[in-house]
Image 1: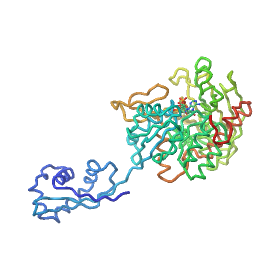
Image 2: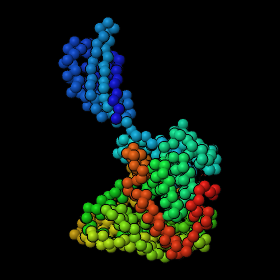
Image 3: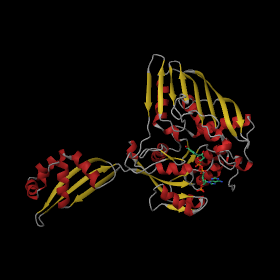
Image 4: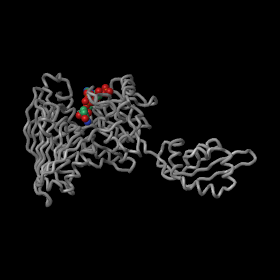
Amino acid sequence: MTMNHERYRSDELLLVVGEAVGDRTHLHPSRLKQIDEHSDAYVERAQSELPYMAWFVRQFSRSSPVLRVSSFAVYRFPSSHSYSCSLSYTTMSKFNLNWGILATGGIAESFTRDLYPNPECRGVKDIQHTVVAAASSSSADRAKAFLKEVRAPESAKAYGSYKELVADPNVDIIYVATPHSHHYQNAMLCLEAGKNVLCEKAFTTNAKQTELLIKKAKEKNVFLMEAVWTRYFPLSIYVRDIIKSGKIGPVSRTFADLSMSMVPENTFDDSHRMVNPDLAGGALLDLGIYALTWVFQTLYTTQDKPQPPSVVSTMRKYKLGTDEQTSMLLTFPPTSARGEAHGIATTGMRTAADPDGKGSAGPAIRVQGEKGEIQVFHPAYRPTRTKLVLADGTVEEKEFPQPGPGKGSGWKNGFGGNFHEEGMGHGMFWEADECAYALKEGRKEGQYESLEESLVIMKVMDEVRRQNGMTYPEKIETTEYPVEL
Ligand SMILES: NC(=O)c1ccc[n+]([C@@H]2O[C@H](COP(=O)([O-])OP(=O)(O)OC[C@H]3O[C@@H](n4cnc5c(N)ncnc54)[C@H](OP(=O)(O)O)[C@@H]3O)[C@@H](O)[C@H]2O)c1
């Protein structure tokens, strides 16, 4: 909080008084003179207008929210026939987070676009985001074009290498948006440079790499978070709260599916990151992690002392050796509150969780307890609809549209060229806000998915790959650093 002292000249004083009192008859200088002759009376009256003064100061003199106007006095200077006004007020300065964007692909664009709208449009008043730099491994021109595309400030720097980005002293936090194969090397580069990091999912290629990133973040005393954006949605908070409230009773099972019909041989060429082993391709690390996210955030995150699950799994492989369909059955050890719990997480590229795109096939996620269930509709990564169904006959449907600056704003976001309607956010700002709050509060990890939980999920995915003999090339599984990829 900042204490401010301001003095206004006579013409500004007229405006202050007019706005404060809300009555333009008070603007007349002769009236002010008259008031000033009885200055005690005037000051007393002004005190009663302090809330309006706070409003005025915010509107006309500072962008930060004004918490309180603590004093207000009027002075007359007979020799110059002028007046002045003195104000003391406290403001809550907005916490500003300076972002550096590492890579300029599809999700980098969606994420960085989402940093553009004023956080107040989603009710967030005390933080703000600024894009100060972006780097592309291909060229500085590419980074420059990207910054323009996402409406970054003119002053944002464009770099032609990731190394230059991590050396930029203006950058507080780096968003790593390369393919998962590259996360370990790229995130380690940032951490070594002492930068805070938000790293796209899957965190790394394997658990050992995640473990080393966590260790490095602790050593450097910086913030690190896996960018599982869905965790930070109000919808996810609502679902977790329903579970914790006991409304659906002890929860013993969650079904979660993220399958999207994108028949790989017709959709991706062999070099595409979705199927290419060199880029840690396959359904599991890209899509399956969301099915696991729902299993975990309903059966693990909601527990006081969560215990890692065991897993059995099966996998159908694509011609390149990466998985095109994977099914996992997780067993969470018993707790006194709910006993043993089972999570069924499925993913694939040949079938769809929502074939007609209208939810006709039913929910993608069902969280089941003794008194009912909470359902979440496709897509598991960006859901906007839930349905609570209780044994007592209660059925409650809820919509969670992503906020944004709204129609008429001329702003759009989406992924892969599929834009939402004008003014609607993609929803990646929730995780960005979490990073800002964490840094503001001095936290070193996200509050809805600890680093320990990210590591447990990586271990589950390692085990699923082990059970099904799916390996990646050594250069992307290695824990050596640095390695040129
Ligand atoms: N949260 C979500 O909803 C979501 C959605 C999609 C993807 N993702 C995650 O985000 C990451 C990136 O996915 P994406 O769809 O944005 O991929 P993409 O469009 O292919 O972009 C990846 C970017 O990484 C950089 N890169 C550096 N080395 C590369 C290499 N050898 N091959 C390919 N790209 C390389 C490139 O940027 P430069 O040339 O500028 O360096 C490229 O544009 C993945 O880990 C994925 O799981 C998350």
